[in-house]
Length: 252
Image 1: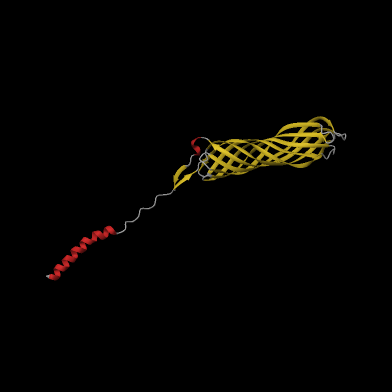
Image 2: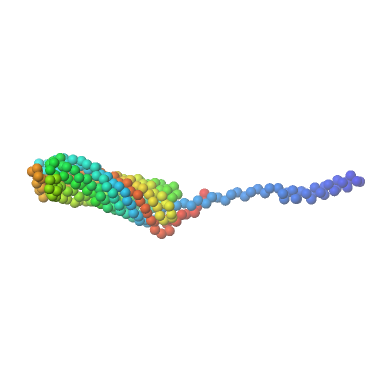
């Protein structure tokens, strides 16, 4: 009888301890919440400023009644500054855009002519315009893109006497060509971004006319023909309008 009582007491104690032990068992932890990632959105109108450096390789021919005579080739270089305006569309990581850019430039060079050593010619690019389409790939706030389209430059060509310094002829003209470039841009706030861009311009050949200029050496000049390419590197700062630049919260 005593053994049965002890067994009954032990069973009762075990029954009372079981719920407590179950309560003490570790509960399976809930899965962590999905990370929240801020995705930068490049869609929207933007306007900005740029500045940098440009250089050009050009060759000039002086045209005489007997035909064109090579006057020599030279490299020009100088600073440039201006602005741009455009619009971009972003779909997934692809970014498409259209942009117009205009820059004041001081890219020039003076050289002694091969036709007549008593004269020198000065070639200068004082303005550059670009009208381009963009195709880019975005990694959140970082954007890498290529661009291509039309280019226009405003050029000035001067001939002067090396002895007296007197100008003999001058011509200003606008030239059209093609442009291809590559750039990188980073959005450091929802609406502001900064970047760097390289562009190459193919400007082909352009002819200008003179009203018959007699050089100190007795040559008669009726015009000039100039071929040139232009390279430019600029640092750019853009501001994107409206709410399009605000980061979009997304879960992955």
